[in-house]
Image (tube, rainbow, N blue to C red; front, side, top):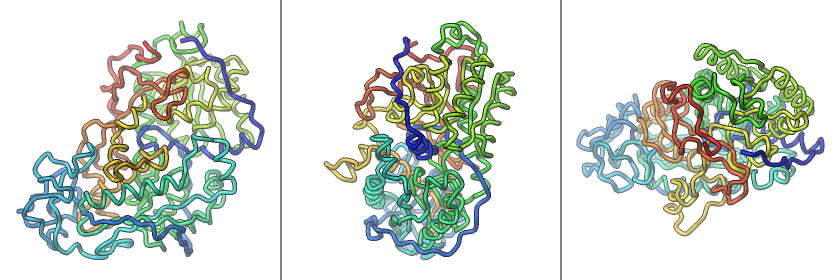
Length: 568
């Protein structure tokens, strides 16, 4: 493929500073994208007393709902409502069995006849195994945020002195908070009528955050993040569904300290989730899974072969030499170690160069220039970039300036973000993301139409709202009537393997803090028309949209053959 001309404007200092700060963690959850995000991990502070009253507290979901399990059918004639569940309910199943009985009809709340192999709802491949409608005593207030009739979920509305600048700089790539909340509420209302929550319903309470989420990214304003987590607790939250962009690692850690379940973990290494268990989860892959994905791609399909997808014709005839770029914070470094050690152990590949960069916005441009010079000097043909979404803007600009044209293997983002870096460099990039399907054919859009016939989602990233809410409801149903953070974790771990859907395959299991099991590999086509928004420039799938299992090296065969990308 001939490279296209770069179209990256020179950014003024304030613009560059704000852009990078804004999206350093942004992977719009990228729940549907199945991406790797690397993050900073520091010791969590202890939450302090605070109050937080959301501007939209009255905006709660309506309807009734129930729950169930993910791997075993609950038979109404078995007599025990919670016991009808599987490991999804864990101890809660036994407790529920002592408190109530299932409906003799075996009908689910969604109206399906519950029997082996039937999921709770017909409209999602990711739904748990069905559960007959529950009738009985659910145990009442089994945990903070739980009553006999409600499960309260919080959502931190963003607060930042640079919010307006973010929206103007990122344009249509920036998510609309009000739209996300509106779409979540729409899904919640519908799910409440379809899922088995044992006589309870979910109500989401947005509240105005005090913390500056952008400052938190740089380890600042942490007392306010701590106060916000306490506010979520004071709002009566059992769990929190804040969009990851408007949260932070510190906010998530403080939620755990406040005994509030968080669904906004974003690409952290597995040990981070273990440290904050049973309170932290993510719809997107863990950093550990993403690192394994990089290792399997490189070892099975790239190592020892010429760098045919590089922009430099000289590199195209040379055996690949790998370099790695990632932030220097502890959690980023830990994931970088997984990549470096995995390459050496799995296929004997030693990185020709590994360079870390500090999350110091003021020096990003200078660091990018230095990093490119080091990669070029080391003869790196293939750069693995475990970078945040916007550092490549400056990195690729520096590559253009130094006439460095390697292959790039990085983190995939939705199409709007892919248009931000220099397109001549992006034209040689592969990632853990495939082509976005036609929106009207996605599960998220179809379910929105069921929830609001004739309506349309308020936010372009509505599928982030959808999969966040879906994962929450799957887990709540699998937890059984005696809902606590401990039984919630049991429910998460109990999930059976799903069929393949829009975001690949989901599966539970011990230690499965994220359900994401598989990924596609994609290549950036600057000239393609995007299914996502109709714009120019889009990710396209390698190898006809094939899905690869992150942690299974055998899934990436045939070994020692080039990936079928860039039209090959």
